[in-house]
Length: 114
Image (cartoon, rainbow, N blue to C red; front, side, top):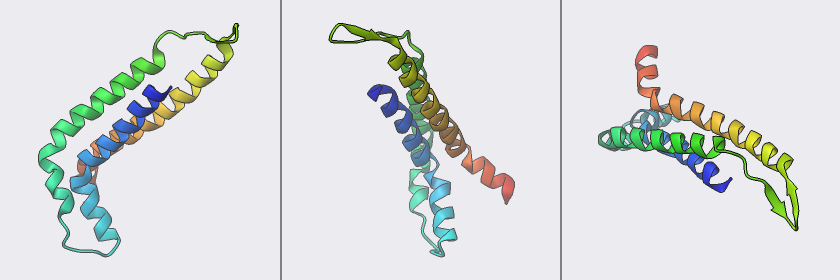
């Protein structure tokens, strides 16, 4: 569970950093702070960060959808707990993947809006 959570949240983080060239200046503009081009410094790393995001999302899908293992504690095996954990992980992964896709495509979305 920890591995899939790390990969899910890692993909959101890298997608956010990959789009920081556009999100950062937009956020500063919306907050009333002008002339800050800090986010533009990440533009040269954007392709690398998008690849890293894709790898993390892919590894998350693998970790969440691999065959279930029985959770055996003190001789009692509980498959229901593994199924519940998988369901929660799939929900978190879906939200993470959706957020990552939005963050990756935010520059194109901003071009369409403006």
